[in-house]
Each structure stands twice: as structure tokens, then as C-alpha cells.
Image (cartoon, rainbow, N blue to C red; front, side, top):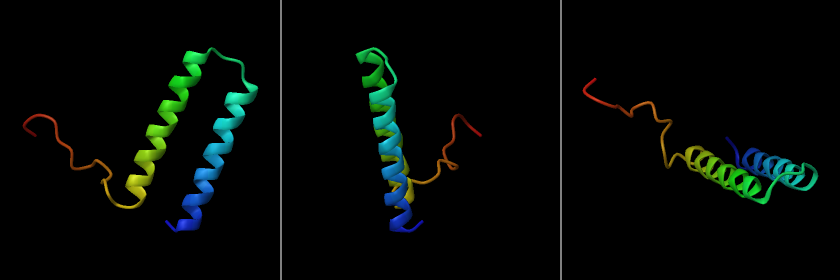
Length: 64
């Protein structure tokens, strides 16, 4: 993924989050939770895009 694609994705996500926060009426607590979830997902996406974290396919639970 190129840097330009990454920037475009971040801008689109930011605009969508801004539009949701501005035009959809909801309680303040729900907005905070939504913003935190979006920030966490975007941070994980960026870390995955730069290869800092893997895709999670080699995570094992138990004795498999």
C-alpha cells in the first residue's frame, strides 16, 4: 500500500467520522465510544499497513 493510498484512507475515515459526529444526533457518551473505537481501529490499520504488527494469523489459543 502506498503512502498516498494511506493518506486518502485516513482523510476519508476522518471526514466520515466528522460527518457522523456533526449530523447524527446521539448522546455524548456514545460519541466518545465511537471516536475511541475508530481511533483504535485506525491505529491498528496503520500498524498493520507498515508491517509493525502481523495479520494475526499466527495467534494460537490453547494447545493446537
